[in-house]
Image (cartoon, rainbow, N blue to C red):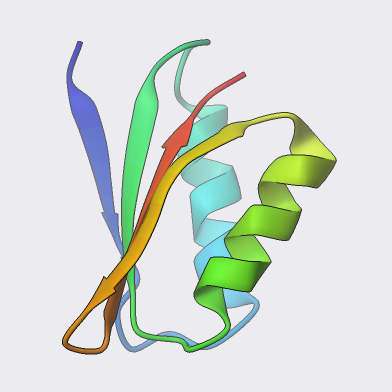
Amino acid sequence: MAVHMLDVRGLKCPLPILRAKKALAELSGGEELEVLATDAGAPDDFAAFCRQTGHALLLSEEEDGVFRMLLRHK
């Protein structure tokens, strides 16, 4: 199964979450979305988003100021 990509680098809260919500709405259950963000609050924001929506946060890591989150559609 392909992993869908969403690049929201340079965007500030709440735009990364809003864009991810829109992208996830186009996916089927079980499909994955990889998100790249530079907003320092993104890891916490995406963790809270997944808790509230039932999507799974599979990965959250940072490298050179870029946060990478991997979400699985519920």
